[in-house]
Amino acid sequence: MDGGGKIRIATIVGARPNFIKLSPVSKELRKYFEEVVIHTGQHYDFEMDRIFFDQLGIPEPDYHLGVGSGNHGWQTGEMLKRIEEVLIKERPNIVLVFGDTNSTLAGALAAVKLHIPVGHVEAGLRSFDKKMPEEINRILVDHCSDVLFCPTKRAVLNLKEEGIEKWVHLTGDVMVDAVYQNIERAEMASKIIEKLGFKKKDYVLATVHRAENTNDPNRLKNITEAFLEIENLVFPCHPRTENFLKKYGLWEDLKRKTTLLKPIGYFDMLVLEKYAKKIITDSGGVQKEAYIMKVPCITLRDTTEWVETVEDGWNVLVGAEKTKILNAVKNFAPKGRSYRHKFGDGNASERIVRLLESFQDTM
Image 1 (cartoon, rainbow, N blue to C red):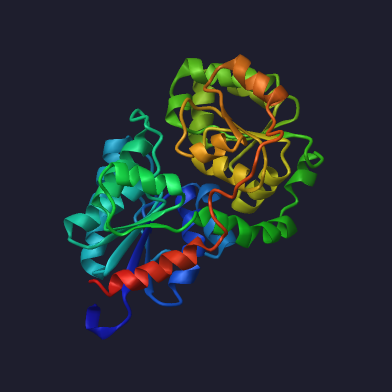
Image 2 (tube, rainbow, N blue to C red):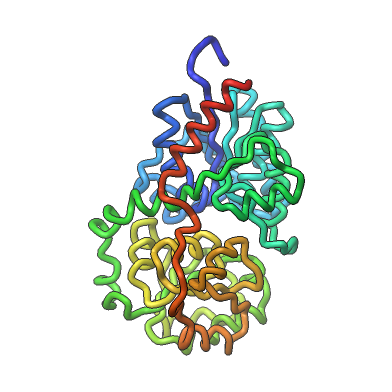
């Protein structure tokens, strides 16, 4: 520990899912530790970046590395170089990374090369689909982490099957904490449903951003054709998705026939999720938020790391097949299915911080 002061923890974030996970953890961390927030700049649009810090009350980043968009190798490499420089300067005792983004991987690699212990929040997830960049990130980060915070029992078992058992802990999911801490504030602050002219439970919410869907013209065309036939579709559109929709000549039809939105803030998104009739998405985080708020979810993927949502009957995988998407919108419902709170009770952040206190005693 530096100079006998507080243990210093560097938290590394860069994209919307990281910000949401950081929010409840940072609040708890700062009661006991000194925190240095490093923002890689993976997301750099205001609506996808700064608004999350403002709404979630996340402290201003101590470092904003401004990496921006790019191919996976270039982006991860730039982050690795810039994070390493900060870690050498700050000399944190532990580096904490979140989820499965390129920022997560770069942060973990930079730390482990400098022999700084790594904690991974949301460890142990597996879709068993290595074509997903996020799957590679998860596996690599888990295998170089020193303390692993698992959101579900299945995540613990996944790690055990890969030979990782030391300092593996079931904590619950910090995104449950974030939803529970913010849903009332979101409902008070957001008027988005009224602004759009919809009634609660009278619209379908959709998001698309994964490369497997956006970069493939056939998949994106099939998804778009399905969207055009769905009544009252609300579609907050990721900037990269917008670029591909325009490239493939699909944008104008969506503008005419759906409620197409620019990226929205966390509060608006929470409210839209809670009061949607159904949610269509390829996002891991949105799948989980749909489950937490008990909204049927239709996932535009062939595999998911959040298998619990499917097993509990609240999520269905439809890939990018138009007929499957439309059939699910019309017929899918979790009738007679259980709801088993697979992601915990909203106290994951407290458990993570208590475990970090125990871990520091071993350093």
